[in-house]
Image (cartoon, rainbow, N blue to C red; front, top):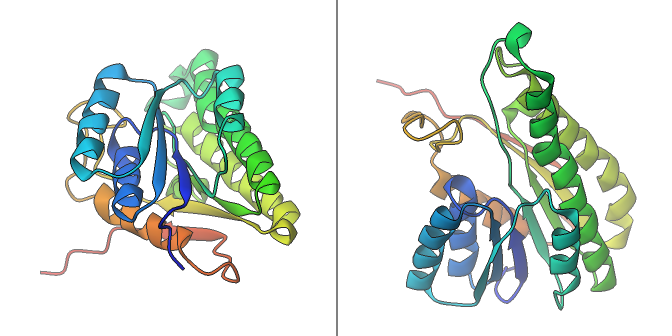
Length: 231
């Protein structure tokens, strides 16, 4: 199987893992629709994709805008792969965490992800099936101190994926929850990347490989951790 010629939607594509995923799919011959909300970062992503060539479209969009998300996906001729990557995080002691911070994280990481997934699945059902790849985190299966809202959101995304997979597999739609450990990105702000974490480019190659697997292979959940450094 190959992703060549397939239509792929990537959210949170303005930087980090999302940008790496958009680039990897484009290099593999897919038609890429990249969504992101940071204009400056999106410009950098556009420059990177221009250097590759191929078929891609950049759409500045906040995935919390349900009306725009719905219209954008409805306008597609077809959709073969969704990489549901947009997400935010925060680090704060639990007793100092304001309720609004919890709401903000759930709005992006759960509600917006749910909406994007639902609308993508509608399109896939209409065009013969597809593959949803939800980017969670190892936080989906463990606790992390000082990050309770983020961990809650990733547990929720894992639960959504497990439930929806039961409904959709009979219709030719696979759902994979991709759970990487720490990634060398600046999700917590500029200069916060961990140099010993997982490289986005390598994770992006894994995601393209998953999307290209034969339809009879259903990879439901995948946990990826940095290997220990042996000296």
